[in-house]
Length: 197
Image: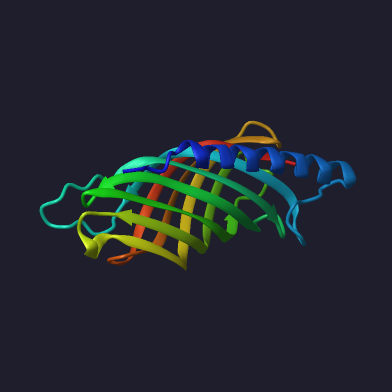
């Protein structure tokens, strides 16, 4: 059985990070306070890595793992000091489940609320949607298949700004996905860095 390697999504995230950095530098060079997202200012990008927790259905008599490595990359901009918009890509790894492999990943868009930039403490809340894709390989046909759908997503985070440009962040997110057994969630807890322009 051929398994999807996690190296592909990591390479994709790295390429997106390089692209975001280049766009951020271009925006910063073209005008002060520029942003990569239209109608926003105070642009930022981030890259987090951590663990995921799958809650999709488990077939009786088959083993089901729940946790795997997760990664997300995101870019955002602020409408004002406390409200902004964030775009991101998340890959929640693949777990051995139901006699096969389950994978989930997607692109999400969220409204973000945070403490004003004057505070070194970074508290954030996100609510939005994810265009997610799942693939389930299972010996039980009832648990096998793919799913693609827009579903809700939300999360919270805490971080610390070392200076106006760099912060370390710890995020907890919950994403809904369309699995063969119905809509279910995958949670993630990730740690990373955020760079502001």
